[in-house]
Image 1: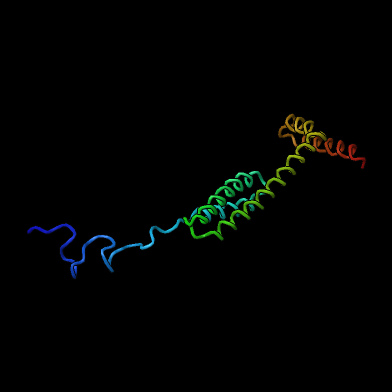
Image 2: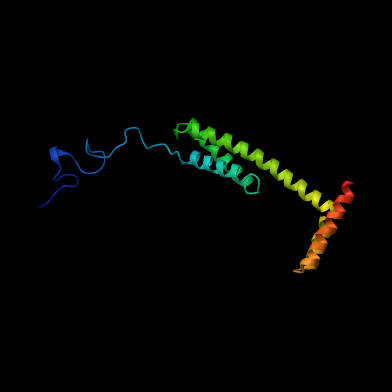
Length: 153
């Protein structure tokens, strides 16, 4: 029994496969636009905001900002349907980037202040003290006295 490809036990002469009539799968307007990039950028922006006080927020915000900008351009060209999400992602990542930059500057300034006000001496003293709690306390007391002398209290 010879049967032609695409024909057989389908009702009313309908051919098998996709898009062959009412029962087949077809997308009349082409493939669906991809929306994942804007969502990923928004998730990165939220994570960057949550971690902006540590150094992890800065790279997350940078990557999220780039993804958000690319997602906005895709939406503008009609390749994605979530322009609003992309705009929100760019805004959140820009705020996270700014906050991360501010916190990075604060950490750098705090580190510089620590090292310029006897921090190196304290670190050396603590290293030499090891696990001796009395020596560790003496190091801390000496550092506090140095700070009080420098601040004039």
